[in-house]
Image (cartoon, rainbow, N blue to C red):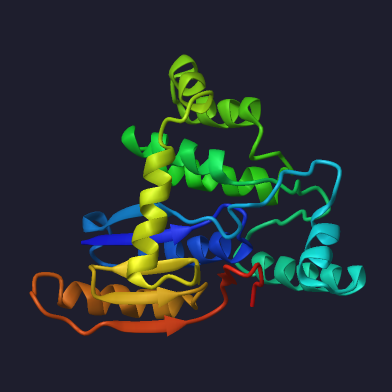
Length: 233
């Protein structure tokens, strides 16, 4: 059974949703028969990488809110992340465009390391405060996963895998993705946002029951997510 997940490595609820989904998958009886495919989705394709501006300043300017309120919002997200064992360090986070990071993920997928690349890029951005638009940082991240350094450098210093990123985003539009994370189970059930673990588990079980049926009900559930306008709720 295939599960497609649209995600952006700059999206806090994508990382939180990933961890909740993984906890549900661990409890799922048929977990070894599940194929997870990570799909690219940029919340802000036009974002300019700004290493001299912190995320609070960027978000406050982008949303037209006070710096204090932006910090409070990020603090709440940090608390939610802690509930699933994640450590967010927004004080260290670098405002960075995620396109090259998505190209790295697309390349890693060809080597069977898509999930590992997704995880390490989340960690690099939210925990380690690394610039996910910096080629040397991406090469370091990729080689730590086991990717060939020379091959990876050739990919990242070219336009390789740009088309794959764009194709994922076009597919997202056709599917109706308006925010991430967005999970599609067995092409029948759509789950939007960082749902509770029990919701993911229930959806896994329902999807499995209809796995080999030609027709199934399309059901969408909403929860905490990041939207294309930059807001996370």
